[in-house]
Length: 204
Image (spheres, rainbow, N blue to C red):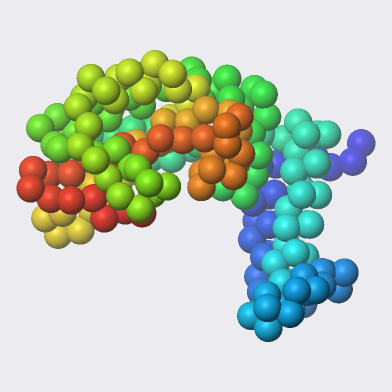
């Protein structure tokens, strides 16, 4: 029986291939300029070939995941205010299998409870205008968004006396939920929590 690569091995393979593409060791020579002179003068064709080579390789890995049913889940540890959360996310270079989405859903309540506990007393902002601005949001509104959510991710940005927590409320495929790539079938809302008087700085 042929070897089936693990999630961790696929991540390592992708990282190695990405470096090879960046160095120019992998090029997709079929990737050409657009044919529009106004655009082509701004394009670096070799850069486009590097990027396309990696995207093609990544698509092959994603097919492998589906065929061999290799999970895209990795586990993260998050420590905030002396509290620790151990929770699943889909690695940004992999895709989620159906069972991965079930794992994310199963941990949604735990992640939301952790968020509510560690952001108590903080000011909440919702990302608007495609991530270019923020507006204040009440905890009740966040709860309303969460009820329509299929999975949640959580990040923190901490430096000196600054703390920002970011809650991603997602639906559909995690790999297509950022930057409106898979809208409307997949997408996300982002809620930022900061100390009173501060403003969000994370660009999500």
